[in-house]
Every structure is written in structure tokens, then in C-alpha cells.
Amino acid sequence: MSKVYATGRRKSSIAKVWLKPGTGKVIVDGVNLDTWLGGHEAIKMRVMQPLRLTKQETAVDIEAKTVGGGYSGQADALRHGISRALCKFEANFRSILKPHGLLTRDARVVERKKYGKRKARRSPQFSKR
Image (cartoon, rainbow, N blue to C red):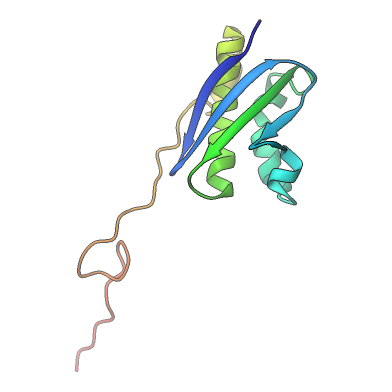
């Protein structure tokens, strides 16, 4: 099969993911995953979770571009994109990934600041006298 494309999103981050049969290389923004995430082992494991569950760590190559947000949001967007690409690549992977919640777009975003408040919900300190 040729290249498969999918988009993953999380917070304000977007990851464009291309998946093709290969040897297990994961390249994000032109560098490999270890360089891209540095010493964040827990986040690396989160990114690789869909590949581990479907046993595709050494069977596919992934190339991705990320934009927006920070490294954690981008990593979760990448995980979402990889999961969606795997479903397009092999239809029966859906039944493996769906129970783990990997195909659901995490809709939690930062709440906007309201007027009269210091943050989204934090009120100014009240003084009785």
C-alpha cells in the first residue's frame, strides 16, 4: 500500500501525519522522535501507544509536521493523527484503537478570559472593609 495521510488535533496543535510501510522510523518536523521530544519519555510512550497496540512499531514509517501549541499538545495531536492514519491503513485496527480512546479528538481547550475576572474564573480578591 502507498502513503496514507491523516490529521490529528489537540488544544491548538495540529499534526499532519503520513504513514507508509517501512522499518519503524518516526520523523517529526524533519528530526527523529527522540530528538524532537528530548528527554520526555512519558510523552514519547504516549506518541508510540497506537503503534504498540497494533504491533506496527517496526512495520511502518511515519513522517509528520506539527504546528501550533506546545510540545505536549503537539505530541497528543501526533498520537491522534497516527491513530487515524493506522485506521485508514488497515480497517481492522479501528476495533483495537477505539476502546483505548485514541480515535476521539480531545476537545478540552483553554477557557477564554472574562471581563471583570483576573483569569477565566478567578475573581479579584474581595475586601469587606
